Image (cartoon, rainbow, N blue to C red; front, side):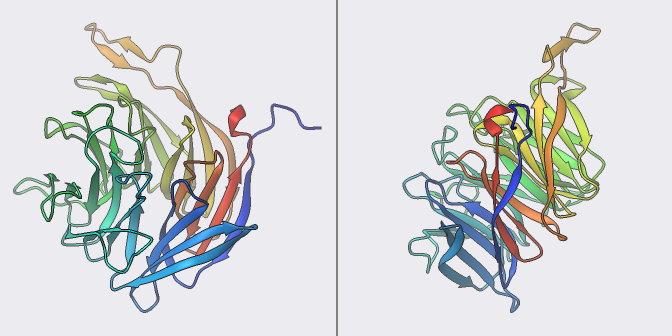
Length: 358
């Protein structure tokens, strides 16, 4: 007999083998479709659109381009347009109309080297302000682009003269809760995490987690900063409480040894910001819940406010592949529906049950 105390289950609903290396997959908002981005064996880029139909993934469209695709986002587009922004191995940022994707709507040589990560904000009804895309690259720079402005980034965060250029592996928007405020968080191969305040064009906070930062994500982009999760090479992730910043101690955090190998990605459940999934190098997914402490801030010896971190609890885990799961995306429309891709050249549609009870 089932009881209300049963844990959520992670069920593999559809599995589709591909003939290329897939780097990223995303649900197309307000649809039963998803897009897969990757690299064909002949060295070209491929973009495929699949539709979930009768328990299968049906290929709707395939587009081949000169350079392999690394990452994509719908974050800077409206729900009506649903334009996809992509970053490729040649440092290009493109925006595509998936209904007519022969030529990009917007194209810029964003970086000198591969675009490792991008994120969008100001679209999809999420976050205030202009539609913007942030890109992070192996060339060590983080740039913010407004698709309405050609060729020039609206912000460029790069190392100063004489500073070493670190490979930027991950970028994320946050704090976009009004027309003026907006932050970008970036993670680097040496363990640096930097929080850039775009309103004041300054580094608001930085720390080092002593291991390459594979992914950073705020629990919500469109609210006053609440929580940030950063994942690392050695299987540890850190949850920072972003509500209280101490002048010297920074933000309170809790760390968890979540996987035995690299945690490639973290994605928060769109319908519940305290639930998130991590994707690991051993082909596994772990579902977590963050529990807040009784008081989120206290006082230090001088009477200044200092944050208090909560705890992280594992709800469920599953091993799907022998290869790393490199990308993961929750459906914004159906709670518990998600898609992930692994380096076994397989895309999987998953259903996570009982999320309304956690």
